[in-house]
Image (cartoon, one colour):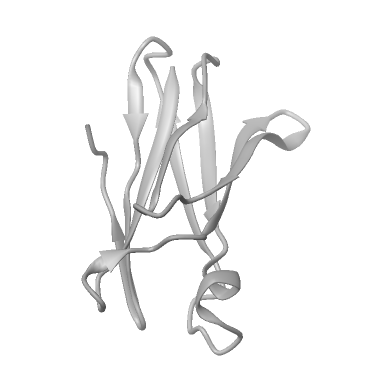
Length: 106
């Protein structure tokens, strides 16, 4: 299983470079950190995690650190399930000042 993400500034129509992203896995003891990275100039983290197990994961995007202290959404958290550990999972995030959306990409 690999995980990647792509963050787009939908209001400006361009990639969101410099967004800090954390990946965690849910365990019986709580959330365990798996990886952390920052989006590149194209708004991408091409491989946030390499091979790992099936389970429930969450991506946390530090929107406030990227857009400033007055961000309506200081962070965006996306929780998702990986059923096939052999598959690639791409989870994009589209940001605007008062809305965001996500989907399973390819």
